[in-house]
Length: 193
Image 1 (spheres, rainbow, N blue to C red):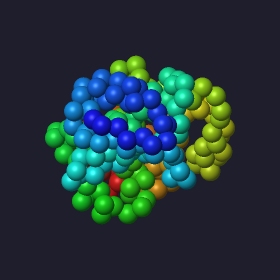
Image 2 (cartoon, helix red, strand yellow; image 1 turned 30 degrees about the vertical axis):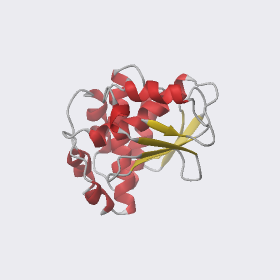
Image 3 (tube, rainbow, N blue to C red; image 1 turned 90 degrees about the horizontal axis):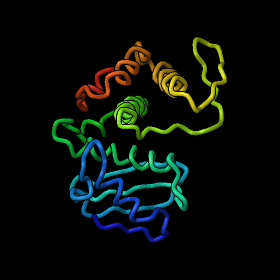
Image 4 (cartoon, rainbow, N blue to C red; image 1 turned 90 degrees about the vertical axis):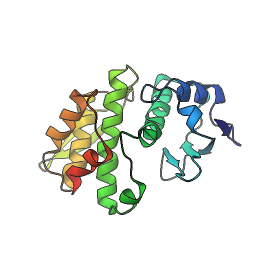
């Protein structure tokens, strides 16, 4: 994996470390010809893969002195690539491009929880250390600490519920509590149809 990072946003050794030791694919690095690194913009942190070339673009904040949270973010983003490269996951870019904006947001929320459940199982999941988030459930606003897994899952449930996904609590709790269960791209799409 060749790294192109003109802004020197992330130490290339850290990127290689994560890509060569990822629990969802032990050597993602060997499957990525080029990794482009660019600074986070208004769309936030993300990772994208060109399916024709196999090249990957990581959009992220500068990581000067990596924290456990920074490392988790890299493992999480590379988790999306690990799933895409896994033939058993059966990722389908054409099917994903056909999703409405709301469906795409729901799909990403479910996929993020699926990745995070598996990272948590491997001891790599890391929530922010401080801060609070406002979550509205059944018309009632709650202010909860961001540093708790229950808040993370409730926030994801509220996001899905507001977009019409039925029984998001049961869905996400099942995914979180069964990190070793094999799910496919279609499994993650099924709740949003």
